[in-house]
Length: 362
Length: 270
Image (tube, helix red, strand yellow):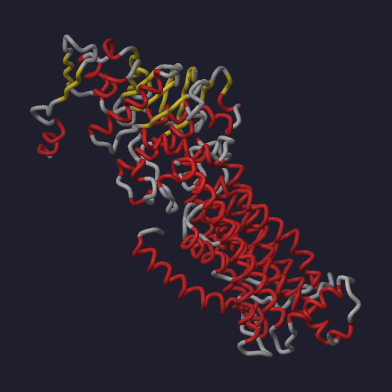
C-alpha cells in the first residue's frame, strides 16, 4: 500500500513537470502563430502554414497567398518572432540561473555587468562612431557596428566583474554582486559623459537603443543568434541539480559533490554570452530576467528542474507577447519594447512581492 | 580513515592551526572540544577537504583529499554545519532529498530513504513544511536527516560523518537523539567526527576526545583519561569540576559562576 502511494507521488512530480512544461510550450506555439498573424497586413493561420510549407519546398502553392504576404511573413515577421523567442528565453533562463547561483532573488542578468558594459559601448558607437575615421572605414552597416560594440562591451564588463569578484580563494557572492553594482554605476557615469558631448540626434538614437528594439531582426541575425544566444541558453539547463544544491550554500554544495568553482565560472560565462549577445542584437530589455523566475516559482515551487526549462519557455512567451503589444498598440509605429516589459512587469512584480510577504516565502 | 598530518593553517600572519595530527577511525566517535577561536571549525573544514591547509595534508583512505573527485568524496563523507540557511522555499523533504544528489538511484528508492532518515531524526511530521518556517532546532534535525540520507546504505563502505556542533539549537531530548544516532552509526562502522560544546555530551558519547587550545592539540584520549579538572581548567581557562560516579564510567563535568568576576571588576575600576 505504502509503495503504491510513493509511486503515485513519484508519478505526480514527473507528471507535474510534463503538464506544466507542456502547457507552457503549447502557449508559446499559440503566441507564435498569433504574432505571425497579427499586424498591419493580417495573414491567416492557414496562409502562414502554406507559406512556410512553400518556403520549405514541400508544396508549390503560390495561388494560396499573395506575394506581399509571403514577403512580410518570411522576411519581417518570422525573423522577428524567432528573435523575440530566442532573446526572451535567454533572459528568462539567465535570470533563473543567476538567482540560483547567487542565492539572491533580486539578481537579474544585468547584474554581472553585461547591460552596463553593452550600453556604454553602444553609446560610444552611436555618439562618436561617425567621427572616428578608422571605424567608418570598416564600412560596416550602422546597426551591425553598434551591435558589435555592444557585444564587446558586455563581455569586457562581465570579465572585469568576474575577475574582481569571482576568482581566487576569498571570492564570495556578495563581492561579485557589489563589483557588478560598481561596474554598472561606472558605466552609467561614462554614458552620462558621452551624452554630454552628443548631439540631439544621437541622444535620441541611443535612448531608443537602450529601450530595446526587435525591429532589426533578419535571417542573418537569427543565424548569428543560434550559436550565441540559443546554445548558451540550452547549456544552462544542465545545471538544474547543481543549482538546487547551491540553495544550501556554496560549502554545502561542495560537500554534496558539486564542483562549486567550475560551475560558477560556467554559469557566469554562459549568461554573459547569451545576455551579452541578446543586448547586442536588440538593446537592453529589462525585467524579463528578474520577473520570470519569480512568477514561475510562485506556481511551480523552487525546484530548478522545473524553473530552468520553465523560465526558458516563459521568458520567450512573455517577450513575444510584449513585442506583439509594442508593434500593434500604435501601429504602424512602435512603442519601445523595454517600455512595455517594465510597464507591465513592474506592477505585476510588486503584486508578487506583496503576496510573498504575506506568505513569507521569498 | 581520514588522516590529518602535520596540519598548519594561517590567514595572513595569524596562525589558526599548528602541527595538528589527527585520525578519524572507522567505527569510532571522535569529539573535538575547546574554547571559542581554538580552531575547531577550521580543523573540520580542512578535514572535509573544503579548506586546503597552508602546510601538511589530509588523506582519505590513504589518498590525498585534493586528488579525490568532489563527487566521489561526497559519496563517502557528509558534513553538517551549525546553521544552514536555505535560500529558496524548499520543503523539508526536498532539503533532505538534496542529500541523495551524489548517488545514482531511482527517485523511488531515494524517496524511501528520505522517509526513513526523517523518521530517525523525528522530522517526518515536518516533511511538507517550508524549511524557512521551521524553528532553529527543527532545521538542525532536518539537516541531520540530509547528511544521513547522503551516507545512507553506504555504511558498509568506509564512510565518514563530520558534524560542526550538531546540537547547538536543540533541547535536551533532541541533543541525546542526535548523539545517539551518531553513536549508533559509529558502532555500525562509520567514522564520526564532531565539534561538541557540551562537555557532558562529549564525555558520554565520544570514544575519543581531542582538546584543542589556541590551534594546537593540548591532549587527546578516552574521556575518562583526559576529562580531568586539571586539563579542562587549563584548556578552557576557567575553573571546572569533574565528578566521577562509581557506577558510571563517564565523568560528569560541572562549571560554576566564579565568585568575583575579573572582567566586571576591571570595568568597575575604570
